[in-house]
Amino acid sequence: MCRHRWRPVRAPWCSRCGQPEPSFGACRLCAAWPEALRFVRSAVWLDAGARAAVHALKYGGLPRIARDLAAAMTDVDLPGRDSAWLVPVPLGPRRLWQRGYNQSERLARALSRHWRRPVVELLARTRETTTQTALTPEARLANVAGAFEVRSGKCGVRSGRLPANSAFRTPNSALILVDDVFTTGATLAEAARALEVAGATTIAAVTFGRAVIPDFT
Ligand SMILES: [Zn+2]
Image 1 (tube, rainbow, N blue to C red):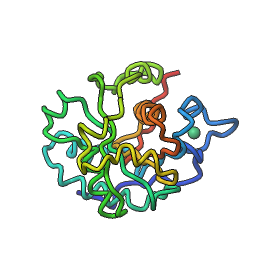
Image 2 (image 1 turned 120 degrees about the vertical axis):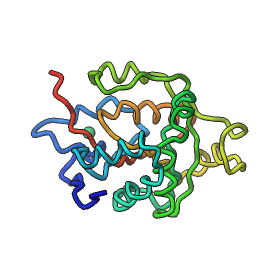
Image 3 (image 1 turned 90 degrees about the vertical axis):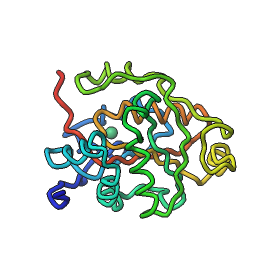
């Protein structure tokens, strides 16, 4: 894999969503996000090489590729990272069964070894969502609305000591959502909304790739 061909996303960017700064005015991309979602950053631009790597991670049956992608994500700087919990964006059960693994969970686990921060699978999909590829930004938001819920400590969190609750009780524990690709941020915003409803106040997110937003106007 030609890792060195991946093109890092670099500042200047919107300090919140990490999108390259609009030439004037406020950033519209993150204006409607839930308040708790404070910082989103991506490691590389999703051009051909990076897209092939994500494709391999998702469809190639090669979850070990997660290590390479996570290595590209280690330098992404997020405030609160040193005390944060990593929260993978979940798949729906059907897609999880088809794929055999959640690529975002593999990324989070690989990243957790670099950052030495725990992974907590706090979120579940409440329903399957259709693939977002061809949707406009507005349709993407509608597509993922209400798609996530926070799991109870009893069913689903792996380490067994109610990390779901303690993550929310520890005031300086930020949560960092981990996903493979950022397109409009609709999925991350919706995942953050579910965590916010459950009491989280400081949420960041990191993705491997950032798509160049197609112009729907
Ligand atoms: Zn923004």
